[in-house]
Length: 113
Image (cartoon, rainbow, N blue to C red):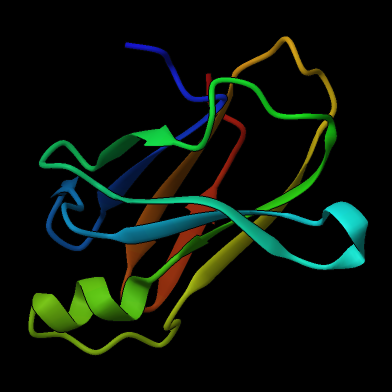
């Protein structure tokens, strides 16, 4: 199995465990418009390892997490219905991991490995 160029891991800090079932989309800003490259849903470990192709060109990308769907399935409402993280893929040889720490009223992220 090939590894995606971009992966993610979502943790729900409200309950202290992985966030299963979060819809995620990966978009590219090539040509000045956002175009969907791939999408996925986090697994039981809160990971999506098949988000997009094995290789992407350098450029501007955005990962969007559908947090409203996730929290609705948990019987909760959320202040942030989605989390959109825009990043620059500079080195085509590197893997890009975008983790998300999530709660109904806050989130944080960083460049993972």
